[in-house]
Length: 141
Image (cartoon, rainbow, N blue to C red; front, side, top):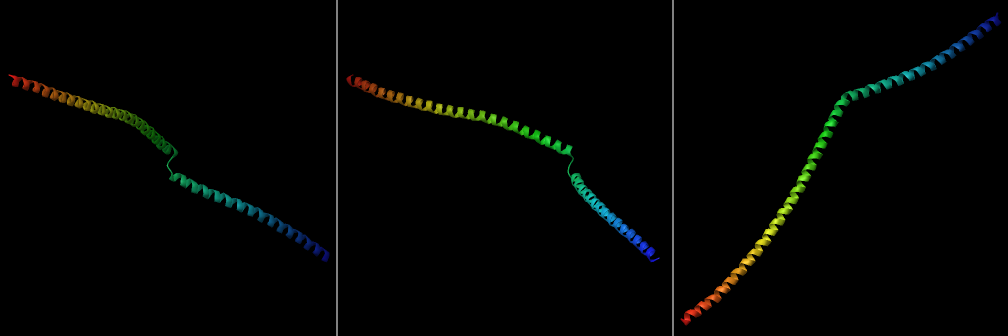
């Protein structure tokens, strides 16, 4: 009877150890499952945060349309700038031509004044010479 009781206790001990081992395995499996579920939850929360940030930003199409409009505006401004620079270049050349013309006119005017002064001096000198001759003729008469 004692041997049967011992065998029964040994069997119960083996069953308890087996049950403990199964529980430990189940606990390990549940720990792995818990870690996996925590990771899934963390990923889901991160996804929700990113989705919220994405919803706060304008749609891609809207941004692309705005970008295209800005690019067109830049091209328009560049074209206007090129046109303005070409016009400025023409104006600079016209200004240089005007300044050269003014310089040439001043030079011609100075030359004309010098020529007129020489003519007047020659005329005055010639009148003085003529006056001497006329004066002599009157004295002789």
